[in-house]
Each structure stands twice: as C-alpha cells, then as structure tokens.
Image (cartoon, rainbow, N blue to C red; front, side, top):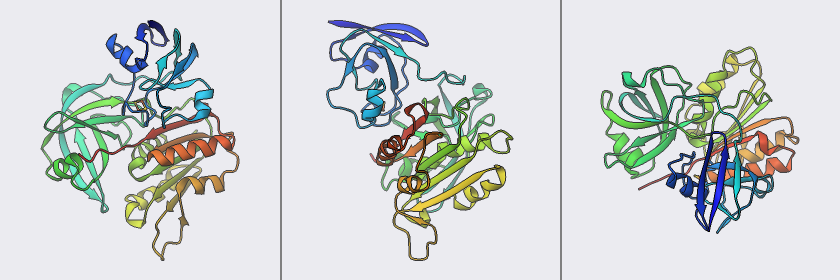
Amino acid sequence: MAYRIQMLEPAAAFDAEEGETLLDAAERAGIRLPHDCRFGTCGTCRVRIATGRVAYEDFPPGLSPEEDAAGFALACQAHALADVTLQPERLLAPCSPPQRYRATVQAVQALGEGVTHLRLDLPPEAGELVYRPGQYGNLFLEDGSPRSFSMASRPDGRGVDFHLRRIPEGRFTHHRVGGLRAGDTLEVELPLGTFCHHPEDYRPLLLLATGTGLAPLKSILESLMDSDDCPPVALYWGARDERDLYLHQEVAGWADRFDDFRYVPVLSRAGEGWQGRRGYVQQAAIEDFPDLSEHAIYLCGSPAMVEQSRREFLARGASIDHVYADSFTFQAS
Ligand code: FES
C-alpha cells in the first residue's frame, strides 16, 4: 500500500510505499530533499509533519523526543503510516543551485597540528557563487566518492574556504589533501545543506562548536561582522587541549568586530597552564545561561555534543523552533 506525501513548499507530491523512507520515496519520484548522512544522525533531512503520521524502525539519534513530539521528523529514516503533508520548516534565503565544478587550489596550509585550511577558486562558470553562511560542499576523491565539509568563510565571490580535520590515514584528509599544492584542481559540489544562518530569527545568538564545527559558525559570524544591527553573540568553542584551538587568536580578535561578542573556549583535556574554562562546551554554556528561552542557538560539531546540547537546552527553556544543528560525522576510509 502506498501513501501520498504532499509537500507544501516547494509544492510537490509523491507516493511512498509501506516501509519506504520519505527520502527514498522522494528520490524515486525525482524530488530532491536536503540530506547528508542518510543514517539519522546529522539532522540535515529534518522536515515538519503538518498532517499524517510517520514511524521509525529504530528511533534516530539525530532527532530528540521533544522534536518528535513537536512534529519534526527525519526524512532519511521516517516511513509513512498514513498520507502525510510536509510543511517547510522555514523559508530559506535564495542561493545558487548546487552544482559540480572543477576548482583550483589557491592555498593549502596547516592550521595548528590537526587541521588544514584549504582555499579553492571556482571556475568562471560558477559566476558569483551565492551560498547561505553555514552551508557545506562536497569535495571528491579521485574515485568519485564525496567528503562533506562546511564552508568556513562568508560568500565573497568565487573563492571558498574549508577547515579539514586531518584523520590519520584518512583517504581524503590525509592522503589526498596531503598531496595537494596550489594550482592543483579538485572536483567540488556546492552549495549544499539546510543548516545556515537565519537572519529573520533575530534573537541573541548562542553558538556552540566542537573542533572544526567552528567552520560554519565562522562563515555565519563573518557575514554579521561590522554590522550595526547584529544581536549579542556568545560563541563557545570546545576542544580537547590548547593545540586544538586552531584559530584561537583570530577568534578572540573578533571582539573588535561586534558590539557585543563573548568568546569562551572550553577544553576537556586542558594542560595545567590553561587559565580558561574546563570540561565540555555544552556544560559551560549551561552554567552561563540558565534560561535560554530568548536565544537563537546554533550547534555544530560532534553528534554527542549536538545531541546533549539540544536535550539540555530544551530543558532550560530553549525553543525547538530556534535551535539549528549541524552534526559532523567523519569518514576515515
Ligand atoms: Fe537524515 Fe542525516 S540525512 S539525519
């Protein structure tokens, strides 16, 4: 038996077979839904169920029970139990359509011990690439398999920046990127993803990152710098030790670019000389913000941090409608 799945924005409809995920059914009908991991972790495929019912074989880790109760679902895991209407979460600002390009490496350099900064120039056919700060792109290995990384700078024309965490013996971040030199070319696809800044959600901003989860938040913050109407910003950046804070000085310097900017690095395995906060980044934010009912919250980094933050923040009054998350998973092979 098939169920009818109606999308309100953009208007479209497709059929889903019993037990078939909403994402698979949409793709079978030639409809592109945003997605990334396909296994219920990253949250990129989150949709809102306006009418109808869905269920899961296994409840996905990327969805909290509160989100489930509020009518959200993960399209890569949910299957319909009735006809369903999908409501857009929010209308997103326009951006360039996702497309594949052969980009040229402009710079590749180490940022601290474990992270590489990669700057790519896009070819003239990319025109003035427009992406929403926070979105990501796919970089391709020679065999055509993709690796996803967030853009780490605000849109500025034809170039894009990435922060790549080096995974020991990782096919892309170790072997492929280790051999790249300025002038080499690399296949990319962008812009992708629904995680992005929502300027219409004008509230004090609480941003949490672990590791290279800083990249999409850097893109968002660069798009807000030097603006008169930027709300107060609190950025919490979690890492293991000082060496992992690969842009510490630069981030600290952003205080000069905002009216109200607070930067709190938090280390889980700090050395003895560390004078700053210790522990987990979400714990530090919880200690500092007992009431989160007025904030727009952006979470980027490890699935554990994203999941725990979401749960704890909702318990402290944060609204599901104002929490945006991008969960990073890593592929070593
Ligand atoms: Fe569905 Fe990642 S694509 S949770």
